[in-house]
Length: 596
Image (cartoon, rainbow, N blue to C red; front, side, top):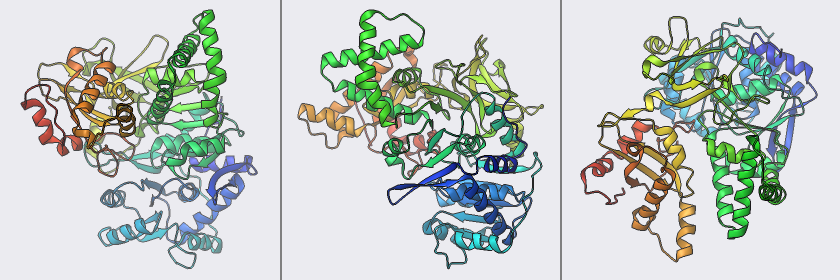
């Protein structure tokens, strides 16, 4: 039985006392990694708690923050909990209008901002937010009364004792991404989050020697629970990635044993490595791919022939180890969640010697529902349900004898959505189970499998149902496809909106001496994309395959509003932006190409 926690203040206090001399958070400064110990972190929490109290923060209040991952983010979180207040994180990448909505909805009393741009934006909206009293800036100079330094100094002048919050009191609000509407504030209690951490202690065995490089946003419940609360509870160290574009470089520097990531990261690894393999001479390429197949067979417990063993031995020495070294060479746990990881990608990453443990959860479940873990792993599944949690499969929504909507019961299920009684009525059952909207099944060994997202499913004109997510992930295995969205709701057939991988296209065109300007209008590119969709979709049912394509010259991003801050597609926004072009795909002669 692992450690059991009642609230997040207890979790922090216990770990900071037990591991006070161990490194907790590392940040890169002037080319060097500087580490803050558990003891130093705890003192910062005490100072911040006193400073927040001087600003009038107390039990039941809400403290918000607009910032990327940084030590101050975690300090302010635990200081807020220690006053009995709730913490409301927002993404720095969100648009100011979303910050304003969240600040108004949660009735924040104080907000911390990452930089002067965010500070100015929040100051501008402050007159429209009657609950907001204080706007502070983490990077303001110490002489400014609104600075982080002033906050800590105020705490030094007026130390404030910590309180142990009631487990059922609200620890924080996590606002859902809002792919189809306004964000909803999921209210998570101390019991919700602490129970999830307690359950993790029963299945994962991290220790104080383990280290992670954090790059997932802590404003998301996955990053927050798995990295901040989870790793602190186990005495681990967390280096904070300075810039996502420097991830590979900093992985080599930090040499983490734990990598908490999303499928998008593993898909990039898959794409980068397979691209390098394809560039090798034919004989070498054949040996490497043979070694990969051998590693996958070995993982399934199958016997390897002599040639397969030789190929695998060559790959281990000459290929796989070099790839692992790029990730620091010490990874023991590569944890994937937030979206479904394709089986082909999981098997490939696993073959490289980077053991992948896939899990499943939602913001509303604090967030982890199930996980693969050492000694209990089945690739392709999202693992076994965590201790203390129960999953029911409601087959009435599908009429299928096996697959249904996943309904989660347990102490990790959210208290409710703030100010959204109609959403609570839709999402929560009479006995407070959460209707996840995800479809799946539990196999005979107790492993949960996800088959799709109910609200993403649509019906073609012929009555056939299509689940676009897994199909899109399959298409994105192509080197030439950077992003893709399948569409066909109420239409006679599917079409695909494709964002090409420009770097791969450029290399492809250069080999042939072609000039692709602009590439998204080039018919040769359209033919290539069609071939790739056909190749990667050959196992799909006929009605699932896209019959027409729209090649785009703009990616789906957070900045242009086509992705949520958690990198999920805003499908309605994509359709709205390209509606006129989509209509031409259904009203023109077949096989023509059209691009915006």
